[in-house]
Image 1 (cartoon, rainbow, N blue to C red):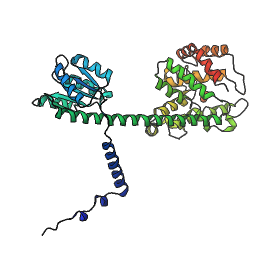
Image 2 (image 1 turned 30 degrees about the horizontal axis):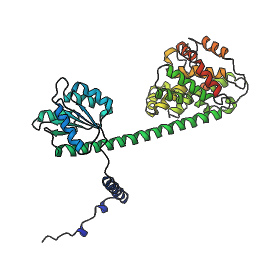
Image 3 (image 1 turned 135 degrees about the vertical axis):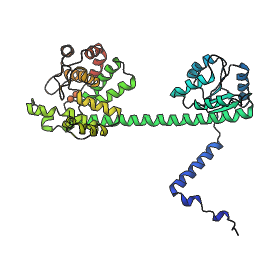
Image 4 (image 1 turned 90 degrees about the vertical axis):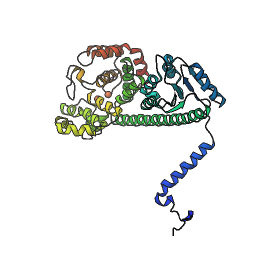
Length: 402
Ligand SMILES: [Fe+2]
Ligand SMILES: [Fe+2]
């Protein structure tokens, strides 16, 4: 005879689930219940209805309006729908399929191709018999269907669910944006700390890296970099002399002129900086000469665009346009643009600021030296752009003086 199992004898789920996971699941349950008990207000979310039959648009909006929704975008000309979606950014789209000139499927396809609208719920207005059309719409990314003629029992729960989904999605996206901003800020701070660390080792430079970063940003904007790219280049350029950490004090802090041997050692700061920022930690540029280690090195390289840029700048900021620079003797456009940009900013700053072995050169002399270096030391185009921004450059020079 089968024994009746009472509730107390049923093995609890808890026994099969680790305690911490169980508690988390229960927490989640509580917060879900709390959330549903305080119903989110969806009535101000934007509902867009596109149907070439104006009466259908009015009917849908009237049903929704009776249910408390207030924010409608009505469109019965399908040729205008797409532009209006981009302008208004609705929270849900009710979309008819059979429309002249531009069909609902055309609109659906275009909207889904734009990543800004990949999470926009799209409810397709369709007669229940149009199965082939429905499959096509699903393939193109339709969220759900609403039968025509529209009735409230069908319409209200679907619109509500779609809006709740959109609200959650928006919330998630804002969380991701917030976290990304926090991460970027943390990255900025870490880079700033690293740049400061390299400055502490080299007590000649004071505000040097800050000024160089700002000059680089001006040049980048002039070259057409957007705000974000220019900001990244500015940050990366503050690490250009990071490799000086690897140079012994006896050379780095030597008051007099360096011997040839010492200078040869000093030149290594480019490779050291490149290695530090690309995470290889090898400190041996010679590794680049063997193809098998190049592969290993590339796999180990940092994935951060900022550190990749910093690594490239550290490696190439002493290269010269005519190939007479170091460490690799790269020529012209073989030198990455970021390295060429920093070269101009770095030299200008060395000329225009005080160093233990010299006073700041007058502005005219700094400009003349840059002009003279066009095509030999520097990329001539970059010098021209830099000199065209001299008013802003001087403001930075004076504001961040040592
Ligand atoms: Fe340097
Ligand atoms: Fe420098």
